Length: 456
Image (cartoon, rainbow, N blue to C red; front, side, top):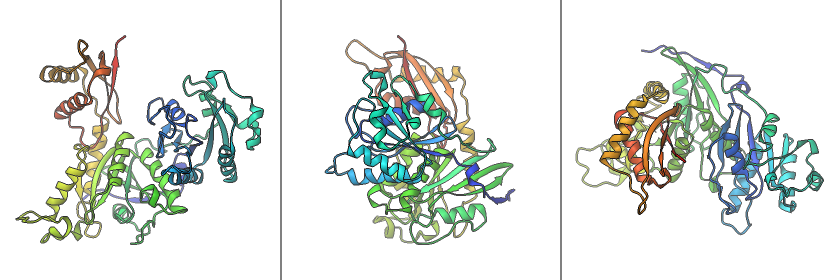
């Protein structure tokens, strides 16, 4: 049927990127530092304390994965327990820890506790003093009581970029892959959804432990297969639960690794159980995959457990007629994941092998779509048609005027629209433009990104 071989990746350290964690209290500028290092706005930045609630990750210069954790907040805050847990998770999972403070403020007992926990891990710890561009920075001597060596203290400005390159120069540098042609596919999903079983079926080897107990996979298992002359590396990740429901210890450690796997992968397979309702966590995972710019396949597992004769057992529908449980399942997916109309749905069974190898076919096709380049003339024809059929609305006497569009990048495809007053463009028109492009170039399985630049 197809050329296939499997091999175990024993030397995982050569295949994964080191993890660097930004930890600290709220409003120290962690999100701004991540955005500055990544050269784009990934984390939400605001003056209000506590804007970041979940871990945000980014691959920096193909050298390391940077994690921005939520800051500490008042103990009475409902989110406080999970936020402190996230910081503990990041310390456990990270290879290097960046304790982040405001350079103009004296540290308090909470900063001291964070630094102490970081140093206790035995991992390299750097003190990052942000906002040094304001000219009010305290001297290094004021921070020595934290216990971090003076040579490991760096003044930076996320706003101007001052000191950022110097800090990056001391951080670890890994390699994404020894072979740039390897296509990395991550299996993502809630615990007990069937990731390890699918992993074993794809690799034709029992490398992962298969168990009905939730949380069996605690780190990233890997297997490399060759399909139609292309090497595909399959990453089996631990299941993710809501932060408040994660157990203390090894499961929390694996949650950070799973987020890192999303960042490392080219294509993510979001696994959903055919016999269970889809949750907000599934939608959240899908959103993280799309925001990371990764290819995505919706993989429905355990199709052999679907009772075709009585779909009402799963979905509570009456008068089902000739429709099967699979029909209702597809309807539910389309409704719950309406923001992913471009994601293909693959119904599989690791027990029977149904459609398992089709995943490889989809992955290769999506990889081609992620590398697709569209001619500028074709793009501008689509833009002009969109403007004529649905002129963008404005404010009073000011109306946004898109002039031309170009593609600037691939993996994911990235388009830049130039014009006048594009800051006034409504989100609905931007979505309309994306639909018009996808009508001509579907870009199946991959998000497409847009930037809007107004002429001065």
